[in-house]
Length: 134
Image (cartoon, rainbow, N blue to C red; front, side):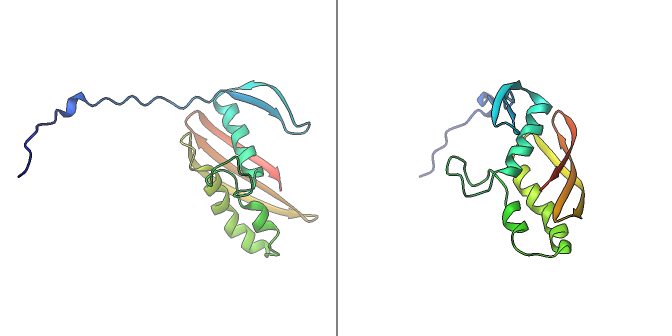
């Protein structure tokens, strides 16, 4: 026997709030906290930290956090393979964050056994560019 209980949909509220972005500012060279950052600067720091943190190796983070860049680079792959796979690996490390909208415009350069990576990221706070030797 079915129940005929009316549900008033207008009573359902959306209580979700924006994700706060204020966080501690990390001095990556000295391994120290040197203040606080917010919004786009916090996202830039998130990008750097997420790409430098190996995925599945730090138990403090869930399986979405971090990247598999180290595994890819250490795999004796050709530059052409790295060039085709790195955009996917980078995007996979970043796109789960709700503040990140798009990761694009990748460029790579191999010089003296070092890989230089550059790309753009659209966020809810604007666009930023990331450059790093990995």
